[in-house]
Length: 482
Image (cartoon, rainbow, N blue to C red; front, side, top):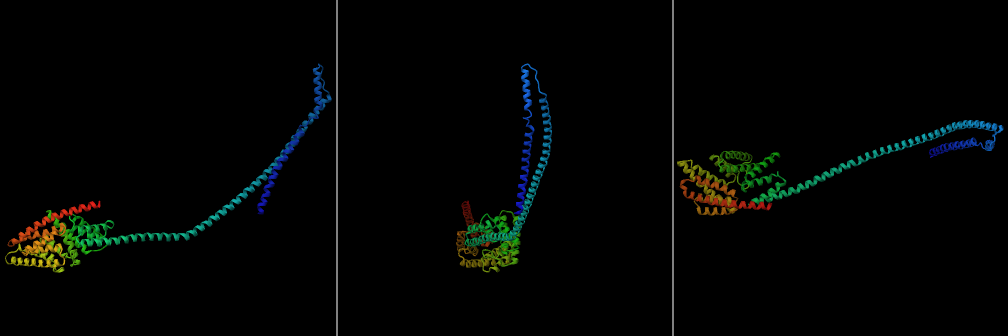
């Protein structure tokens, strides 16, 4: 506070000095000029002499100027000249002194200005120092803030990430629960014979989870065994399933066996199209898949609770390896004793061997075949008692009854089997077996051959009707989806 007062008095003193010098200079100059030009007294006599001389001239007289007046005027002029020189010297000296005073004033002003500048610089430096100190304090505060806030921000980000993952997990869990429900429903619809509904539920799962193994398995089986015209799609599902299991380092033995069944079905289609080399290729691929699966578990069974040794026997039969086929069906019968499926195929294979034998061997083999057909009838009737509406059991009863000369009951069971809502694909599979029976039926069984041929004709008509119904249902579902 004292320092500021001292500076204030310095400022006022310098200002008063500067303006005081200027005022004094102006006053002294004014006074000196008045004295310099004040010559009224000295000029009166001279002016009067001039006026008298002018009057004389006007009157025609000679003008006369008194010598004393002239001398007086000359002395006055000389005096004014001396005074002018003296005044000039005074003015010059005054100006020099004023210049000195002005210089002093300017110096004082400069000193004042310098002091002001120094003062401003000092204040600016002080403010700058204060500002820098505040910046440093702010930086310290920012660092402290960062040390406090950043961990909390990281914790908050982690919490948000956990929350996001939790929501994703909940959605995944909800979807997984829906998938389980849809797959259970697909399995139920399949076992009830509602194959198209089972297909819809399986496809619903694959829409958002294309790598779901169970959905691929069910849908592949449906398209291979029960839905006409989709064999290649079914095989593609099994190929995809095989790839998914490979990535997960899993070996689903049953899925591998079913894949073999699908390849065998493809081979059958190629054989029916007279593409024998390609058919043989697929048969060997199918046999490799099935035997690899059975090597890991020789008691594997399919959806119909039948042993996978049955399809292996069918492959050997298609490759014309009858003894290997018989051995495979015997293995299947060992897995599912009392099953009409392997027993009926064994009976057909025995009948086929009859055509290659002669004499006593032929007679013995024919008796063995007839016994096998009677066992098939007995097994099928027992199974039908537990599942009275099962298509396969009814067909086995019909076939075995006709081959055992029980024509009436055989035709009755055939009608019942054809009246079921059985996919045309399964009817085609049955038809292939009946045609083999006709091809190898011995001459002495001509009445049975005739019944077989009539049965085949009825089956062909049923297949055509069923195919039309399936096409209509497919078109109807396609329209609903649109």
